[in-house]
Length: 164
Image 1 (cartoon, rainbow, N blue to C red):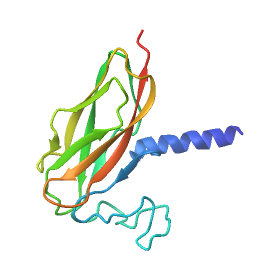
Image 2 (image 1 turned 135 degrees about the vertical axis):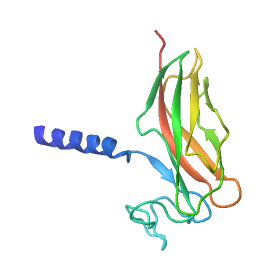
Image 3 (image 1 turned 30 degrees about the horizontal axis):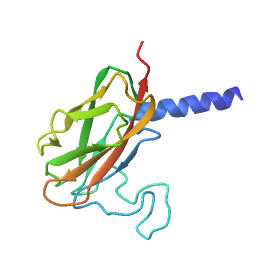
Image 4 (image 1 turned 120 degrees about the vertical axis):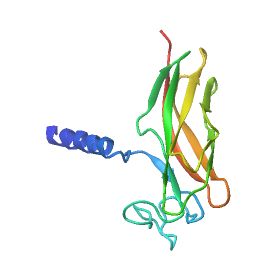
């Protein structure tokens, strides 16, 4: 049983160090993105991986990169996180950002409403009011290309704790 625990801890650590996020959920966007059900292959059957390139992003696509670990904050506290944009070859559009799923009393505000074509990231302020809903919550960020192409999404978690 000790060995299983060590393997589980090693796997979790490897995920964090690799930056892949064991529970990270992200769908690519842009003109080169192929819309389909999450985890489905082009033929529509389930797969454990996307049918995109083995390394990097498909041409003319983007992917939103969010924190892989839950951001913890207390009621009445404000924290800043970074949302990054990975660009596939030939994707040079601005990407407008929208956030949904914030619980009552939590405000998510980017310092810019979009990531410009020349930029790679944006800072986002997360404010928990003194009466913000306690617990772990999932926030969805949706990126919409300025000109054309599919929207991309990613989710991240926040945990609101009682102040004091």
